Every structure is written in structure tokens, then in C-alpha cells.
Image 1 (tube, rainbow, N blue to C red):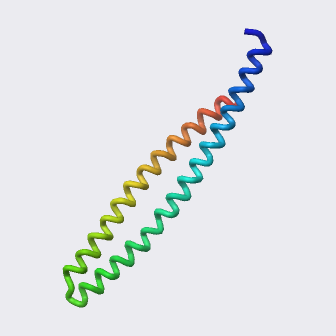
Image 2 (cartoon, rainbow, N blue to C red):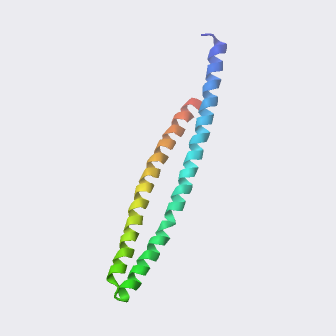
Image 3 (cartoon, rainbow, N blue to C red):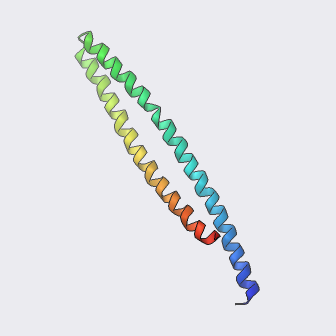
Length: 104
């Protein structure tokens, strides 16, 4: 393999690494935005807990229990999505680290 061919291959690798790096950063930003949106469910959970307290204060234990169950379900789903997003973030960060090696 000649020097020109090696140089060309190196430039191609760096160009691909730049593209992959850019996509990894875009993916990380999307996940950050998703995590931010996911945090909004904390407000919904608080409102459901308040409704449960109001229902219980009025003696409607069944309705209070339903509000609490919905709140717990939202929290569980929120935690599952957060864990998945966090794992994806780790993958994107690793991709970013690997492309940094090619770019250097």
C-alpha cells in the first residue's frame, strides 16, 4: 500500500469518524431532551398524589387507591424509560470516545 493510498484511507476514516461523532452527539442531545420531558411526569405524579389525598379526605378510599396506583404505575414506567435512556447515553458516549481515537 502506497503512501497516497494510506493517506486517502486515513482521511476517509477520519471523515467517517466525524460523521459518526456528529450523529452520536445528536443522539446524546435527543436523549437529554427525552429525559427532560420524562421529568415532567413528576408533576403528574404529584397531582395524582394530591388527588388521592383529597379523595381519601372525603372518605373515598377506592378512588384514592386508584389515584395512588396510577401514580405508582407512572413512576415505574418513568424509571424504566430513564434506565433505557441512560444505557443508550452510555453507548453514545462510548461511540464518541471511539471516534475520538480515529479523529486524533
